[in-house]
Image (tube, rainbow, N blue to C red; front, side, top):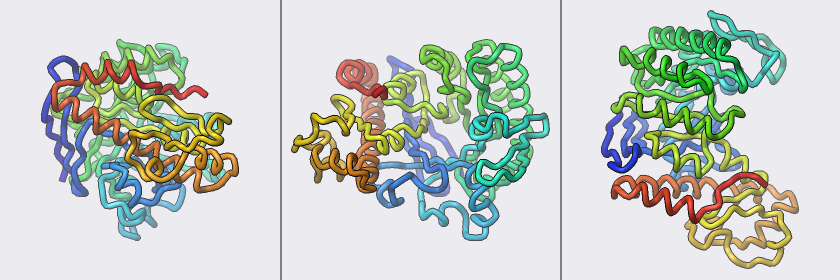
Length: 373
């Protein structure tokens, strides 16, 4: 069971309100997916992730294929049961992780041959195998295998890579079985508008995919290029399918790209930043190790309703972080994930009220959401 319903478009921007229906529940969009790469959102139990407002999480095919193995997860009842998460799951194909392996991989028309980062063993994933793995995991939304290009890359190299990704997408679609899982195609083309437009036309012409993602962004390119490509490509994607911007997730980028018509986001920023002591609030970012918080008895964010902000002071959070206590990671992650969930709730409310343009202006003027430290 899978269906997307477009509920509303903001008349003053490209912002959209929608609903993704899956066998494991609905996802109200725009939505942010906490990253559960290896079947877990780091430092949090599933019940906590759910209570923080997460509707869907992202798990990674590459990592779960290598460890513990997709066949083990299939035999144990699928990924939802394995990780005790009853809500929707999106699985990335692993293309980005394979790209990150550098010299440990070899790409051809047939697929990707690579060495495991765990034990050096050899593996081969084709577009068909990537779908097979994700079907074994039982995710609600699967991603086609794609090649993520580095930045910078020449036009010729990006064009060659795009042809590979498009061919893999067609093979992925042909391999998919009719089992209720959705399959998203991925728009590549680096920072070249001509290639992005070509990719949109090629992947949307026959309606073979249940949704579309913009990939290959946030890989080192200037932010203005990322925003420019998103602004160009997102409005050209079909209105009746979800639009997913892969790996982009600073609060300011999310707000901006919702205005371009993006429905889904994922990023490690809230969880990774929490582990490094960088915390988001509605006023300013907080680097909790700073000495100014040593005897600060105030909550991290007085406007936040999360467990951390309701029960602990900045001074205590700093103490935990400086002492290297595991609880520091837990409480920091609780707050950051809740911040992102509340941000999406505020965005959806603004779109519903046709006030997104005002919300965007207020947000840009009143929030320090940069991640530099």
